[in-house]
Amino acid sequence: MHATPSPARPVNPFRVLADHRNFRLFWLGQTGSLIGTWMQQMGQGWLALQLTNSAFMVGLTAACAALPVLLLSLYGGVVADRRDKLRLVVVAQSLLLVQATALWWFVWSGHITIWLLILLSLANGAISAFEVPARQSLIIELVSREDLPNAIALNSGGFNLARVVGPSLAGLVIHSLGVAWCFGLNAVSYLAVLGGLFLVRLPARVQSVSGESPLSELREGLGYISGTPEVSLLMRLVFVYAVFGIPFLALMPVLARDVLQSGASGYGMLLAAVGTGGLLGALALAALGQHARRGRLLVWSALTYSLLLIVFSFSRSLPFSIALMVLVGVAMITTNALANSLLQRVVPDRLRGRVMAAYVWVFVGWGPVLGPFLAGSAAAHIGAAGAVGVGAAITLVYSLRAFVAHPELNAL
Image (cartoon, rainbow, N blue to C red):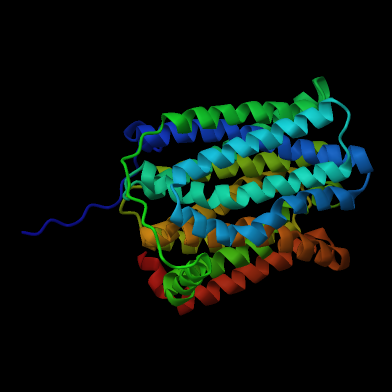
């Protein structure tokens, strides 16, 4: 008599923290640091507006943090595959601490200018281009391969918790202490992640030394991505969603003011709703059993995300839009976290840094640079709501075509 496999059962979403000391240290420090990162991001936009009173310069400052990621992250993946990933993350986080401290000092002392702010934003992006691929590919060394999807989901949960807490704290800090202390508290938050990283203990690894040039290794990584159907499909899906699906966040201030007639308070509630939904989605993903059909779930979450955004583009009610944004947050983080974990499950360890660098290049590089530009251009002609609806329709059509053409994705 043959035993039938039991269906995937929900588990404690925080089990991976209890089972893996290294990941627990990493996650606690990283989540605390991300709260500071969100405070700094909000503070930078506010500071740029104070310095210039120009929406263009606010956007330029934000773009300067993403541009180095676009230019350097692929090489950052080569470095991550050649070097000790934990050491790379420690060095990069230390440099980010220096950057945040410098930003705090220049603002606190009254010496800040818009061009100095832009220069420090470029420095932040350049460091992140090496830090993010190393950090993304480090996670598997902190947990078992079986627990990797749950760890990635919980990591996304920490990101969304910080997305809710960070901007709220930043608003209080700006009001009571001044914008400089958004950067000062972010600098302090890096001590939390560095403290955790210094306590991480990994088994000694013999770092393979390749005789190939960095350019050859980069070509090898790109060749693997383009030549492996499931990896290529996932990467294209991430690109389409990053460029056409996620830029609704960039248009949120316009949607809140001009479409929903709600002002700054409504804008804050909409962003908080997205973060709350993202946190709920991440915890639900972390609670999935190890044998859950994550490929099938990716199909449904991607399609649901597109449909919810299309409905949102027609909404003129603030309460209904807030409810939709909670659901959008769930679907958005589910889609992103599943694509990330499926990529990491199929890629060989020796190429992990380069593949995750390509993921970062698309999601953190092209998405924030190209996506808001296209969405803003469309909004100028058809309105912000129309731009969101058209972008969501593009992701829906692309996803339907991709999932029909590649039914094997359901089996991942």
